[in-house]
Length: 219
Length: 371
Image (cartoon, rainbow over all chains, first blue to last red; front, side, top):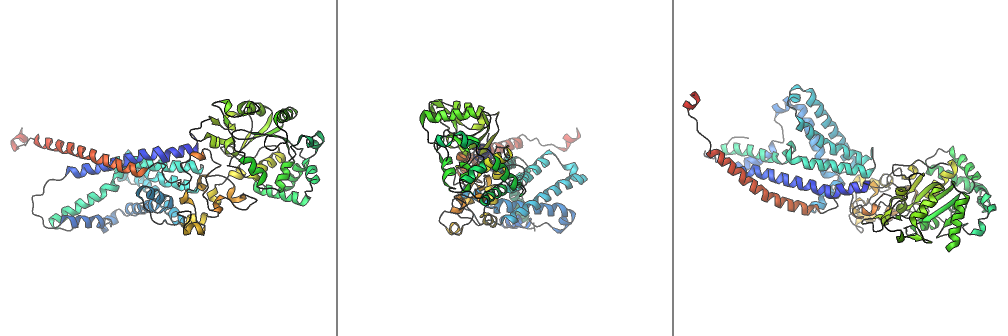
């Protein structure tokens, strides 16, 4: 298989397969959660479920002070790599082109120097998170194979993307192919691992807010 | 060109390159200039310039046999026209081009006789240059003087000191090799494993790259350092993207969206128009074309990636390399629709399971606990 054949498979059938698994997996899992429903609450409603639910989706993005004090490192490092992923995925020109190709519209890209710097910072944050996971006794006890797998498929696209951009190690075509392959791995893993939180996060926050809203208490 | 058999007599062949250049009125100064340019192009130390000059001066004109197979003659056109009349052409005049069916004066049996004579006379020492791919499906697809391309290549390769594959067809199969490859075209490197081969790909390749490789061979008697697909590192060591003068626009996020928008007029990056610069290794951005005038990107057209294997099947010239080659929107819509249907069924099954479990649930009393 030549380099261009490899890249063509990754950009063609490979991406198709990954897309089918990602979309089908996410849709079916979200529907399963929603269709299972909840028991009817027989108590009298003391407030609005909807407004409290929606508000909580936003407010839970800011950690409360006691949680922040207890897990400062986890929260700060977590925020850094999440922001890094957000910018690198959504504001790097070639990625915007991909999104535009699928949904029909795009937006301006950020300078590559900013995206590049955030990639490095995110990789460092993810490495620190792994180190923390092994140095903290409780975290080490709680760690299972899935956690490590999820960590790997998250950092892999960042590392391979950085290498593809700077043409480190291999030729540009091969490196680009490996980068897209690592993203396809992430897409395939997402619906079946903790990575599903990218979607269920909002449902969970909404439920939390809605329960409090129904009871008429602050969420 | 000294391809006419009358000027290729033994006396002429015994002349060194230095003699040949002097007889053609090339001054010492311009000859050294050429040596300096060659040294810098190949990233050699300036200390090598006198050595190159000395080696070239003394070099006996090597016999070169040029075979053209499934090709369009673009490689020859590129070599002979675009740099004329510079010293590169004179260097070319000063090798003994004993067979090249486009350029030689002889035709028919005379031409073939010249090829065979040159092969016998210089056995083990001649340079074999090949452009075009070789069809394997049916030898009749491409023949010269009734000899199949395969037979001619194998015979000529036996006595060659080294082989220079010129153009993407000879190096990687090129356009004849493009899907579905109707002639079963293969490259020189696919067939010959026991001779040193230098790949000089491009559609066509840059003329100075061919003369650069030749100069290297004349100077050192060896072939230049090659990359993993047989290309001289000096010319194919860096990507077009890394040496492109439009690169700052890529980094700033300034792109031409169409061929006639403001970005195109201002000379912004052509990545979104399908430029293959990031995955293409060639010297276009530095040596340029037409005597250093410009290169495709400078003229406003994205790089096609012509010096890479299978460039013809790379998913579309005007489609950016980061974009999937197939229609993903359709896949997303159809998959989502199917998944919603599946989700409804699975949801119903889950609900049924839940109510079944609820109904089979037995209530315990305080007495049960006491048992």
